[in-house]
Structures are given as structure tokens and as C-alpha cells.
Amino acid sequence: MTKHRSLSDYAARRFRFAGNALLEFSDPFFAQIDKLKTDLEKSGKHFVSFANYDYLGLANHPRIIDEAKRELDNLGVGALASRLVGGERSTHKPFEAEIANFLGFESALTLVSGYLANVTTIAWLMGKRDAIFIDELAHNSIVAGADGSDAEVIKFRHNDYDHLEHLLHKRREEFRHVLIVVEGIYSMDGDTADLPRLLEIKDKHQIWLMLDEAHSLGVLGETGRGLPEFQGVDPSRIDLVVGTMSKTLASCGGYVCGRKQVIDWFRYTLPGFVYSVGLSPVILAAARTALRLMQEETWRISKLAKNAEFFRDSAHAAGLSTGPAIGRGVVPILFQDSVETMWASQHLLEQGFYVPPIVQIGVPKDQPRLRFFISANHTEAEILGVIAALRDMPPVSEEAHRIVAAAMAGA
Image 1 (cartoon, one colour):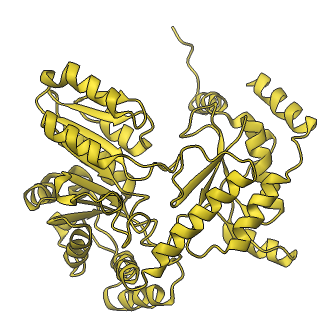
Image 2 (cartoon, rainbow, N blue to C red; image 1 turned 120 degrees about the horizontal axis):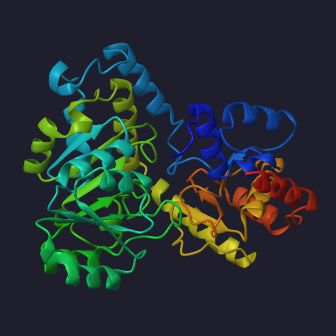
Image 3 (cartoon, rainbow, N blue to C red; image 1 turned 120 degrees about the vertical axis):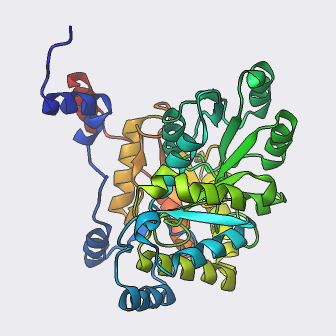
């Protein structure tokens, strides 16, 4: 029988297992970036963040700010209730029609969180006699949604579609419905799924395909329509596309796109939509304006691609590893261990570059990294500067290793 512990003791123990010993060396997380920027610039350093999702550089666009202010004056702040039971604002359905049309789908539904969009859609869609096949490096929201369903969850090796085919060949006939969930751009590695191959598999085995485009909207494709445009695929062949407005669209919330019959069903039954409040009119105004700006100022999409490729190529020239990243939006730089990764993050911050480390959450423990989100607003000088800072980084001090080793031993 396990001895009873208080919740506080239990939490402290779990936090130790989660790797809090690394924070004994430095804690780069939850930085107040506005204050950090002010403080660094007061000390004469140019502050550059590579930690934010502002892919097209729209977060502070004056038109978005003006439209959000206008909507605040017109409709106020809140959505006021669940849209099903309390009614919806006049801007909800028009935005959903715009995002669906832009992405090439019949209909769309918005939710208050991109994370929630994955969790509730996957968990609600699949039942006891079904199976969900997910990439082993799937985002936590996909994993949580799959685990929250009554379906059997089966993982295949990352981007290994021969392995997926093998699993389907062995087990497809055991299940009523099968759903494959993949990502347009994988948020930790910066690589992509292979849609043409996946659609072949989908048709061959008569299964459903769901694509998470959280990091793909505005990033992939000549006009930013995501992985289908980037790989020359008709989006209507995909059953569901899920995405977020917190990245390219400079606001927050999530969306699900699909055929009208599917979205109509979701509108009345999807738990994360029915039992949650609708999006604020202010948020919708920002997202709608960002979506329109993306189509008007298409130079931002090509500038982002140029910057990301330049970052990846400059990193390679400096002898740094970017793993399988294709050079769009997300580009990681891999390190030998967690201590070196924490050291690199701290070193960059001292030079004015904000890049928190990824050491325990979302990646294998033997693949710690700094994850760089590239923006159309970044300059070549900023990119060269951060690469040079990493290239010339001093070796990890013995003191840093001692502190972490001692803390880890105590854990």
C-alpha cells in the first residue's frame, strides 16, 4: 500500500521527476517578454525573440489593432455564452465561412483554443470499435484527444509510412472506422507529413485522414494555404483540417474544417464547442483582419520562407544541427544534452536573443534543442547574429554541470 502523501508533497515529487533540477542552473521560462525587451534595450542590447509564433509579422500590424478596437466599441468584449444555448455574435459565421473558403473546404467551426480543437474533435469522433493511428511525435493535443476517446490508439514511427502501411495491413479489418492524424509542420522538428502518400493509404484502406495545420497556415504554400498547397494536393480529399489562430492569425482560438454535413453535426454535438463559450468578437476581428492581410500582403509568405531557409543554411554553415527541418517556420538546433541546451539559451539571452530551451517536454530526452520560430519580420542581420552567438558560445562551465548534477542526484 502506497503511503498517503499530501497533494503538495505529491506535486513536488512529480515535479522532480519532470526535470525541475535543471532549473537549479537557470530558469529561462515564463519570462515577461515586454519587460525583458525594455530591460535589455536599456542596457544597450537589441532584443530579438525567436520564441514567438508571429510567422508573418502581423501581431502588431496597425490594421489589426484598429479593427480589434473598432469591434470592441461595436460589440464589446465577450461572446457571452455557448453559441448553441446563448446565441452567437454576428461575426462568428462570416469568419468561419472565410477560413473554410480560404483553405478549400465547405465549412468550418471555431473554438476557443487550438489545443481544444484537436482534443475534442478526436475524442468525440472515434468510438469503441474504432482505431486512431498517430505519428509517434504527434503534438500533445493529438495524443490527449486520442487517449480521451474510446478507440484503440496505435502509433507509427515518425513519418514512416511503410510502417503505417504495415500496421494497417495487419490490423485494419479489426476496426469499424480508422482515423489517421498527422501534422502539416511538426512543431518540434520543423518537418512535414507526406500528403500524397497518406492519401494513397487513405483510399487504399478506406480510412479517414485528419491534418493538423497549426504551424502550416500562412507558412506553407505560395499563398499560405498550408500543406495541401505546398505539396500540390486537392484539400477536399482530406476529411478534416484542424488549426489555430494563435500563430499566423495573430490572435487565439482554433478551427475545424471539413464537409458541411460533418461541421453541421459538430455544431450541435461537439463537446468542446457545445459546452464552451464562443470566441470573443475582438479576437475574431483580429483573426479575420490577419487572414485578409495575408492574402493582400503575400510578400510576407515569401519573406518568411526566405528567412527560414537562410536560418537553416546559416546554421549548417556554422556546423549546427537542425535535424530534419525543411526550413519553414520552425527550425530547431539540437544539442548533446540538457545542460548544454540550458547553457546555450542563457548565453543567447545575455546577447539579447530570447530562445527558451526544450529539454524535457515534447521531445525525447536525448534530443534537447533550442526551437526557433522564424518570422517575416526577422532581418538577415538578426539571423546571422544569433547563429554567430551559438557558433562562438563558450563551453559549458564545470560549475553548471556540478549544480545540475547535484540537483539531479537530490531528485
